[in-house]
Image (cartoon, rainbow, N blue to C red; front, side):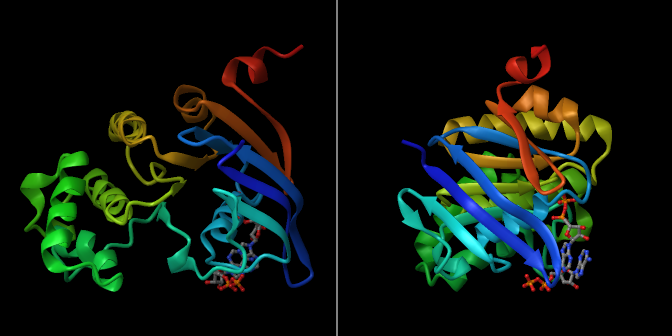
Length: 225
Ligand code: ADP
Ligand code: ADP
């Protein structure tokens, strides 16, 4: 049985139909890439799953439970965006701890979990720094730690590497994949970069014009007659 099961999902912005009848199934611990051209609706789909925008119809079952009526903070979802959106006046430690403070996790437990998350992204030595003292790649690792620290059931990555230069991009994508495997975290990685999709994923879901046009492993998709 699939862990995430999206059924007949519909979304319009006013009169503009973004997608109709999206269906996706993902097994627990799978890493899938949602690949498609700019503007095809990938971000909107992630925002619907995270509850950052309302859907017009359909179901998003996570572990058998429908997320659609649930407020975003109850969904158990971690999300990383292309722009890291860190708080500039907070240290790395405070940025990562922020979500736990909102969840009222006790201080001792919170600092333990922040330390663990920073270790995962190899930034333990940077806890006291401020975002403007970090490189783009390091900022994105802080953003990743900030989403992991809440122990999400599902991780959504919206073009997390697009703002970084090529060398860092390669390194960080390997690091993301290693962390995902270590935690066994079910993950959707959005990209418009075919190479990224091919290298990274258990399965690729191809989206175009608001529809899922194909889905399968890299070999199946690119050797099909
Ligand atoms: P992608 O992530 O694949 O680049 P998006 O989901 O960002 O695509 O956008 C899909 C379409 O929806 C685009 O045409 C975009 O302009 C439109 N769109 C995105 N957000 C909104 C919004 N809040 N209101 C109206 N249209 C939007
Ligand atoms: P929703 O109504 O589903 O909650 P919003 O209207 O809050 O979504 O849109 C999210 C963001 O996208 C807003 O900042 C909005 O200004 C922006 N946006 C609006 N129209 C577009 C568009 N055509 N393409 C991309 N982004 C858009």
